[in-house]
Image (cartoon, rainbow, N blue to C red; front, side, top):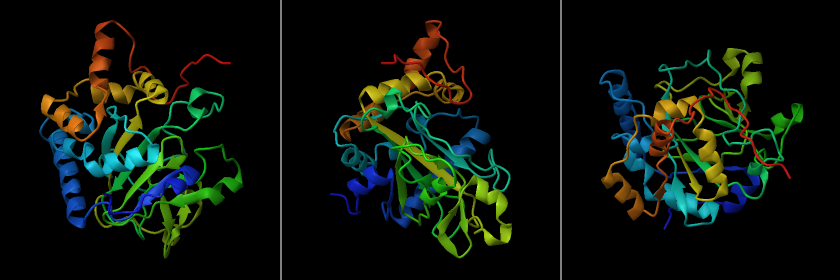
Length: 299
């Protein structure tokens, strides 16, 4: 039984939810420690960059029952799968606030072609975002564009749909991977409910923008999906993304980890093994650094 509210109607209407108090403050601190242990292993210990389930520091979070129960409730099915899409980022280790600003984008396969398969029926891929410091009144969280998982919003009116995930300690965000969003969001100083997307961040004076938290900004993400045609198409798409080649080429799931996922009711689609098999067969993988349009048969 979940001890926090999961509003299915709001999720499908708006495309996202903030799950208040999904974790305790102690669990958030432990998750943050796990992220930094992984980061230290990469930067100092020579450990490879792998997805969360292949990361010895983070793998247990992937099959945490709370993620699985929420995802199943939102998506309305028991055939829930993890497909190698889990990772983290830490400010100062690859990007810097004030210099690197996340642009508006979607994370699904068919991002601008509304006639493509992603836009047929309910989209069954979701992503959880854990921002492991207090963003209730500080910048650095995610901005989403409400209702953009159902349509394309353009012009100045699109900004009326912008929402800032001002999550606190223990809160999690979850959103449709079809929604338009921007990382490293900011909000107005003193008014955390008022978001500043990439364009407005560059126009509003710095003193009017809420500062980042006084600790290193750390984000941890895990994606799940129903094992259906939308997921299969997305897996095919990911095989040709260069960052997946870097993440999956050295990733391996132990029998114990797979057994733990199975016991938790989570299917694992072994994309690292699938990528290595494709490479062994001489297939081209990891060719695209940025988004590309996967072909499909048009009606």
